[in-house]
Image (tube, one colour):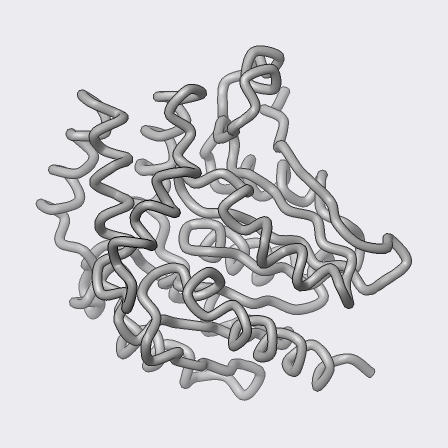
Length: 267
């Protein structure tokens, strides 16, 4: 039996559907303003990753441990996604969405990733990810002091942003401090370390757009741009003044890029 995925919907269900998947440790509420903006034209369903929530009652009712096996997680998300939806995934949510779109393409109309990389850590022929040593140090911090680890993560996400202090404060307001689920944090990091979707990324057979921040210190826009230059269905756009959360830093540009992309690829 799988852990439930918490979702929230906006807009008219008769409109074209978008399925919005949040990132590691960050609840869907961080994307709410963005989702509301998209819901002016689309039916938007937002999803948390397993075990991540700001809702204390939801956490208390969720008695099944979060499952971060990539295939089980894919099925959990498919179960709650609208049929015939465009999938939009942020960071780890984007990596998982690439995996779903490549392996279960009948479930996805098209794909958009936000600040997502085919591999978050450095690997052979992938030098610009986070070093394994740095990743392990961060994972150890999360394991021993989850609250301190989340605060560190916010600092990393905002680093390079134009209004870094204000963004840090905004992101901190969304941290699930009162509903921390250590197994979800650790399981998500384990998946983030192991997941390598370079092959899936290159073989995507549906329209896919990748929005990246030019100032992002967690995901190298240069490296991802090289990865996306392998398939005529792929597009890559760098938002030069954004860090890791362009949907907050430049909501207008993100919405415009997504609307234009969907319009151009809708018969």
